[in-house]
Image (cartoon, rainbow, N blue to C red):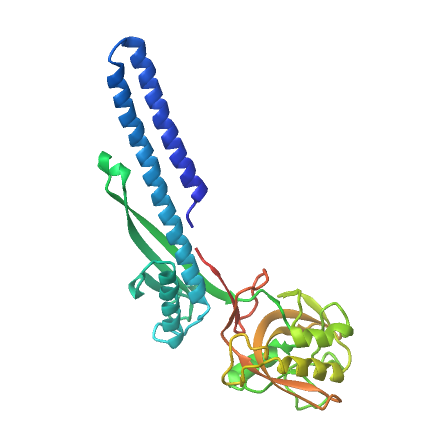
Length: 351
């Protein structure tokens, strides 16, 4: 990004140097000359106005560079919301390009596909596109400095933004799926009907509770069972991070599960379905992907997004089924290193 403080300091130093040079010249001249004061003053004014012109025009150039950089930063951050993309022919990449062009235009800068390039995972073109980079140069006309032979300047901006697996999530629900179960479902292409809170039915697939007898996938975010329903309905207001150790909620939690699910599910007023939903639909939930580390605790290793389908069991032996949503980008991820890539990302500037 542009270093505004450094640029302003350079301008002030340059102007100060010019004034001091002029002062030294005048002091020396007046010590040796007793006449021609009008000529000296006229010459002095020309020099002083020349330095002032440079300061004004250089300031204008710096201002334009700052505006350009801010516009490019906004453009790539917006475009990154459309990533990742499989390749440069994919719909996702074309949407990312269009988004960058649109946002730049909204800030009065014109960019084209020629100004845009993809950023590949691990910088390998055979990998998916996880970022977008924009380079743009513009000409800035001088005004006062033209009398000194300076017509214009060229300023350039470079901005890149990309997506990385979310290192933390605000608004997560106290449900879970184990990394082994989700990985197996993804590899098998069977992610349309996964369990993120199971019942006592052995056919539920979502968690590996073989080492945690009596656990049904519910998590304790630190406030106890009294807030469990609230967190399903509205999401946890705090941050859950990769690497965090969480306690399991004991028991089936059937009634509280149904109550929280029903409240959240009914918040959708847009007629969303599992195949056609808005980006901010309340039925989309962020779920910790976990590993069981003891009979009472799990470790968060990543996060995944799901669309809520149903809560079965009639409040007596409740389970929740949901559809896995890969490629979801959240704008406000908590800080922290991302875990394994399970398709929930945060966007950030790369340069």
